[in-house]
Length: 387
Image (cartoon, rainbow, N blue to C red; front, side):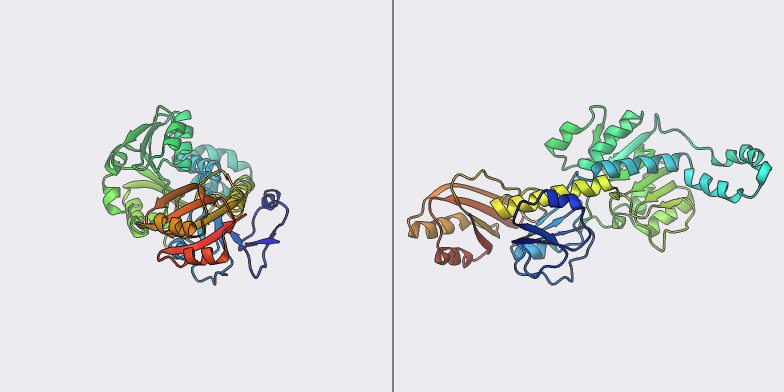
């Protein structure tokens, strides 16, 4: 029985993906895979049996992916599975900020005990909540991945002018993008032209707080900033100052903290981005499929610490090698196989940064001694024979 350990509640639809012989459980001593959402693994005692970790969501800053790579553990995420849920919340943020919905709802509650005076009070008070329409306004989208591309298409459909910035735009996302979106080549172009700016990029070591006073100074007066990606992408002190000065008319985020809560013209959602049953189902299904394909076939899709590498099996015997991206690795592995006169029928090798992955379909079963020799090569993290 192959056990898949859950560190958070995972949608039960995942059970429909796992084939016979798999057991999804929240208690396991020797799991082969782990599924989680927001659980922090940085202090987690990872069982040696774990081959892969699958995050049912896009962000993986709660997982020490680099350290796990050196242990030979593949970390998966599920980009795009929750894109529609986040896109819809972005639209809600745009409408809420443009039409002052949060403020108007609070004001209506304040007149709840006025009885027959309410209609007159409403007609008199509504002038305090005059907003504007989104049609014709310009939105700047930072990051045109699965979510950003959907935001671009949706906002263009309601009549907004779309500017997009993404120096790493993939062919797949480019093809999905509305033709009316205009791709710009710098963040300064976004800042200077956009009435609304929304950010959809992962949090990395070098972009923490990159939306700060310098960026805000270049924005149009009265612009709105929407951040449903990661709270740390925005410098909170700087955004508070920008809102208080009127440079920004609103800041809408999905990451409440003590500094932001209760501040005028700052709207904080309680991390609702992917909190829909549909998104949770989609993420669970994608994560489960990726785990099964890796455990059963060694195929890697949507990993954050190893390259995408897949191959249709052409023999019953497959060896997978997770290793450092360095010269002479394939030659050393081939030499060990040649010593036992085992032919390589097919192989795939891909690299991603410091790490690489090799799949070999061989003509005969590999011996334990052979696998041990491959594992002993300097720079090899983990070796598996998959039958």
